[in-house]
Amino acid sequence: MNNSPDFDAVREVAHRVRRHVLDMTSKGKSSHVGSALSMTDIVTVIYGHLMTYDPAYAKSPTRDRFILSKGHAGAAVYATLAEFGFFEPTRLTDHYQNGSVFSGHVSHKGVPGVELSTGSLGHGLGVAVGMAMAALRQKKTHRVYALLSDGECDEGSNWEAILFGAHHKLSNLTVAVDYNKIQSLAPVSETLALEPFADKWRAFGWHVEECDGHDHEALFAAFGNANAAPAPGVVICHTTKGKGVSFMEDSVLWHYRNAQGQEYEDAAAELEHLAAMDRKGQADA
Amino acid sequence: MLITGDLGFGVLTEYSQRFPNQFINAGVAEQNMTAMACGLAMEGYRVFTYSIANFTTLRCLEQIRNDVCYHDADVTVVSIGGGFSYGQLGVSHFATEDLAILRALPNMTVIAPTDPWEAEELARQLPATPGPKYMRIDKGAAGLAPDPGSISLGRARRVREGADATVICVGGILSEALQAAEILAREGIELRVVGIHTLKPLDTEEVTGAARDTGGIVTLEEHSIIGGLGGVVAETLLEAGCAPGFFRRMGLHDIYPSVVGDQNFLRAEYGMDAAAVVATLRKALCRDG
Image (cartoon, rainbow over the protein chains, first blue to last red):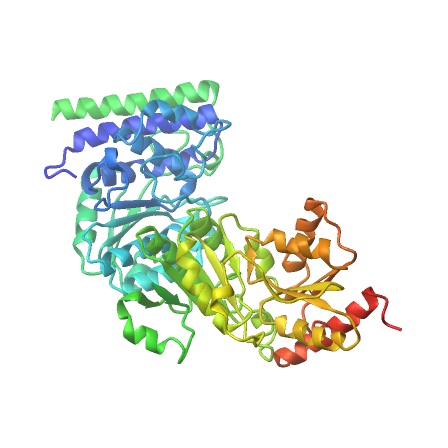
């Protein structure tokens, strides 16, 4: 979207998205705040620096496509779409409310910009593969992005899609894995170990990049390399679940819990402090 | 766009050669095949997925539900091998719950032709019904003379007139009902026979008409009696306040077959062949001596 990336501006968007996520999950008393904070930098970098789209014409045929396969973190996508102009951020207060279209797991109905509804894991990549295959057959130049969780890589359907993507050289497809090392009940390594994770993707024929999933410059560079590869690309984003709120970080509890009362106040203060530090760093530089 | 789950040896060769840009072999990976079909449909393709028995349906049911049906994608799921078509291959290859399960999905149209020519004609009519569709093809055939003009997706086809009772069938097993009608005609029993090639949406007028105008209704399907043709006819009649004189569901009675054999053998073994239809009707009409 941008020729000369304005990293400060998109980092500022990421701060606002984090705050939306906290507000949405606290007001809605919904789960998955940790999962949404984990992927906030990835999704804001994709929308802020990488994708071509027109929020006023969300279904433009030439748009790049983004699919959230880890649908449980839908709050981060809703907030990102709102921040990038697909709809008014005030609508986010509907999240999880009775009669709302903003379901906990991301849904396309009534929400401009959401390509695919997900929530059951292991669906998004297959659909993304179909979209990428369509673009290839129709000789179209847009890209397809899919964001997966690490726990989701337990699903065999993903590995079907991974085989297919490599076999058909879907170089217009880029996958991001939000590798925060924690899944539903326990660490990934104690549930179904993914390591050596990068080697698995390489063995399947994918171009692999790894980076700090909270470092916007590093994400931008990694996606750039993945997008340029002649094979489908995957960016393994090393992240921290609950990133930005100290007591949510690296905690299984915050896969489920939502912040109320003092916890909400503390979390909001931490996120504000983080944003302020970031702005100060920018000013000093 | 036709996507196969690595099946169709000899059957799909000509198509794949004539339309290489509209053909994909997804490999033995039905979940990805179906999700991918949704992605292709969202990009403007009219997509068909193809495999046998339960592989295009139950193996990837959640992809059909969440991806194809919820997004109302124009994907036709084609399963060859309805019922006992692959009768010698064993329970894994018997598609005997598919109609009930697929019928329950919102947006889904459910089609099970009774003859190859009917399948051909219905395939021509598919584009007029965008969105998810399930087409169940079985090896059996009613053997009726081609009459494409009489076929309309969503409308039942009355293939024999009679007033004593109606046999309503789905799929190629219609042939058994027609044989039964011949046998019973010799005993002075006149059967109406109705072929339902579109199970959803159901031609409710034809079904309620059968209850009103004939002595009773028997449903016949190479499928479980739970939730398929028998289920939908019962639901329809009861809600319409249209009780038939008698009502019998013929099909598999909540079991897995324990033996194998060809389609005709298994129909006989599990009480859904012409002889079973004859016996059921004699009893229902109190003509069994």
